Length: 500
Image (cartoon, rainbow, N blue to C red):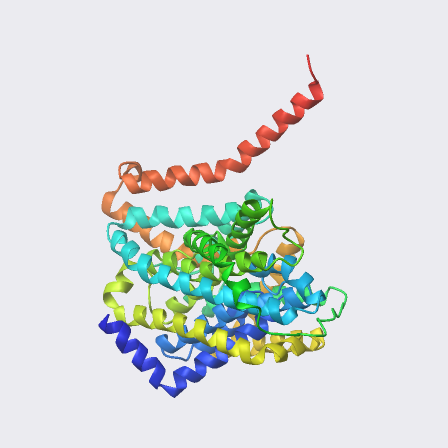
């Protein structure tokens, strides 16, 4: 409690920190509102600018952009029927019909109130569950952490769109990238191809900017320009109070779902939103129509989306396991600033943990205030020429990569991984597992090799309860797609055979 109070006073009385929070939140909302620019891309593009900041200010900056973009995606979803982020993909189903009826302002306010409520629930979930899970994490030793990294990679492979096999291959490629540089035990150089700068390993910043920034820009630039017309009339901003109150049960249920799904490694906001929306649609399908401008649908989607933000930070801070691709970028930010996420973070740096709590709470408040004040300005932003906006982001990608070490090599590395990510998307290979592999790979190798040095036997993984349980879950997760295909083939064969 003392650290939390101290962090609150420090942040609120520091004009530089407050300015960073306001700017980051504003930029996050703007980038999140632009179609095609996801929260992951927003964080990746802004990550280099946090490199020179103090760790506390860096997290204030990045969390502002993270949460701001999570809400900003609903602006374009409601006004032009194009979700700005994957988490807002279902907000458009009920938000856009309201906008077409001249109630865009009401739809945006419903989304904003729901987002704020979900964010608050996610914040309480982070504050309550993170210390508890961190204490449980002290029971983890090298074997447990090694298997935990494998579990996280398998969960991401299973949750990635498309082929699970291709996602596993991408994750393995990311693991291979994580081995580039000096061996942690022998200090011998590995896979550096005679390039001295690679002896320190692949820098997470140009990699993330290339994979999540440049790749997305290339995908957007190849598409024909379709200037969607935003809703011309924002109309009234505030819905009737009694109508808002009617959605309280939906907000509570969806926030809880979003928080729980957010805590699950690799599930992400898209899964949280889908489950929240599906739950409410099933509960009210006999009395209400979803997808036709129902405020309850907006509330369900937005509360689930923003509650998942706090939930995704729980496994990140307590176990060093990213909850989604956005928090994978945050892992990179922590490592760059010399902070190893995990249980030790809570005992060695309690002041930093308190800073994260306060930073997220501040961001939630700033997002609500800025969005209320600038709603009409955000709507006008969507009428700007897309190519100009994309060019601006491309410039940020180049300057951000260069600014890390003032090295042209990092810019070339960013371009290489951007082109590689673009090629992967063309081949249907997901790129997110690469990021997880690069981030978790060194941790997996360190704990795996330490386990073999200390215990000298692979059987230790099958003699300790936590690794056995995690390995069993991992095996089930990886085999589920195979069993699903077998079941489909058997069902198809039964239909072709027909009745006896």
